[in-house]
Image (cartoon, rainbow, N blue to C red; front, side, top):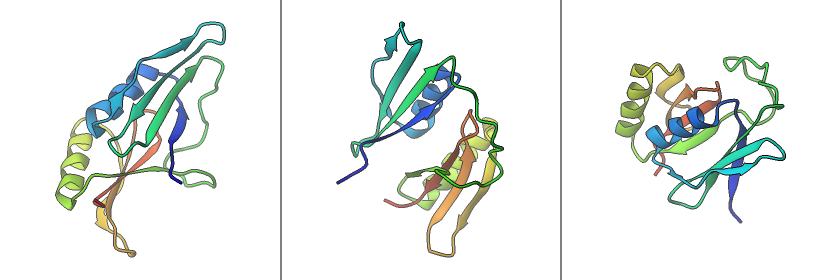
Length: 131
């Protein structure tokens, strides 16, 4: 078994798609639209086959959860970038472009080198050195 994809609702489909395409080298599929349901989506694919489905529909409310506060449920997307140097480089680039850093870069107690940033919707993205 493997994870096929995760899905995320967003109020701004193009903005969130562009963020992941620019910083995380995903391949973007064709935009899917269902006008009858007011639904649009993109699949963003990684080299290993996993995907993120970005979805937008006007009647989905924006989450009231503060992204700096932890809560139960899914809490972050973790993306392996292959090296500590790449974690540092990408974290610095995101910070320079105005994306908030929540933690790190740092070596965790369980041996991971990682940072955590917020995407344009306030979702946590863990950037780790795993290869």
